[in-house]
Structures are given as structure tokens and as C-alpha cells.
Image (tube, rainbow, N blue to C red; front, side):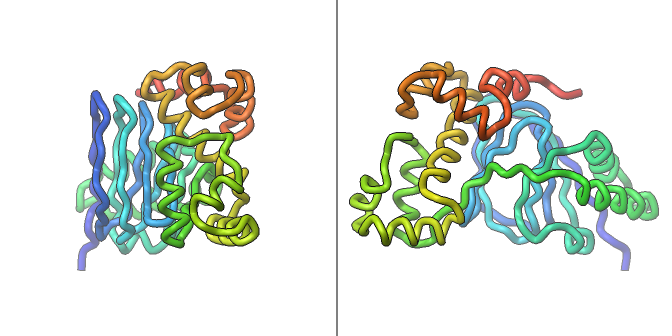
Length: 249
């Protein structure tokens, strides 16, 4: 039986665009040439920025939302190929060879199966060499903690303490600390900073100033916010925004 060809699609939006929760039989690579896209699964929240690849395995329920203008492309990967790829969502630092191979793979006709197989071998090799993006937020699984976490993601406050949240969800400090870390894989302090930098990334893409973002996240001053952002993102907010606004040919 002949293999299904891969599907290549481009996308572009001049303003914020959201897709509600959905899934598909194929796996999906998404490459952002310009702008910022957020992805949410039932257990994690991700930010995909310029020159990064999302990998979404087949059958995974997910929702996405762009932050302002965005353009890029996606390649749908049929199950016979997707079985060799990671079984979980990941964001990858995309090498020029990996990007070019996926773009070429998505443009092949069904008669070019030999080329498709060779390109897929190159893609697998590149995937084993590339680094994954560590900035993901794992969501708590219990109903009380998840409800609080989703509200916090919309309006992070870096000054919120463990005691504040424990009281809000009706738990002791000790119980909250234990359950939160076991469910998210990181301490409350680490999770809080990751949430702040994700929201900051979205606000930068929406056009907010560094000063506005710093005070909205409840930092004492912009310098403290910039220092935190650089630690987690590896670049300043200005550098991050410059890269997100650079169109890739």
C-alpha cells in the first residue's frame, strides 16, 4: 500500500488568532518565521518563538494562540513517519538543514517516495543533534491547583507567596508545597518565574514596554525584571523582541 504524502501549509495572520482545543491523526511540525505562538495541552503550556519548531505528536489534544502578527508553516507527518519521532510535545532549536529538509519534504509529490525517505533520515539525524527548548510550564493536575494556576497565567504576580496560594486553595503550606512540586516537577518559585517570563514574552509581542511589563508582573523595578528575563531566556527583552520581529526569508 502506498504511503501517504506529507502535507505542507503556510499560515499568516496580521492580528491575534486562536484555535480552540483539537487533535489530528497526523503529527505536526510548526515553524514560526515571524511572531510568537502559544500552545496549551492538558498538562503543559509552551511559547514558540521565531526560528523554533513545535513538534506535536499524533492524537494530542492542543490549543494555540498567536500573539499579534505571525507567519510560518506547518508540516503534517503521517503516522508511519511519526512513530519514529518523540511521543511528547517539544520545542526545538531548528538548524537551517532541519528547516530546509522539512520544507522540501512537505513539497514532494507522492511519486517522490525515495526522496521523502532520504529526507526523513536527515530529519531524524538532525533531531537527535538539536537542543530542546526548556521553557515549558507543566500544569498541576489536581482541580484546585489547576484552577489557581490557569488564573495566575493570565495575570502573573511575582510577589505572590506560597502562603498566599496555600490559603487561596485551602491547603496547608506543607501540603501545597508537596503537591505543587510533585505535580509540576519544579518548585513554586521556579514555576512562578517561568509563568512570568512566558507572560512577559506575550506582552512584548503585543507591543508592551519593558517598564509596563515589569510593573504589571509586580517587580520593584525594570532592572530586576530584565535580569530575570535574561536568566531564563538567555537574552534581554529587547533582543528577544528584535528576533521575534525579524522576518525570515
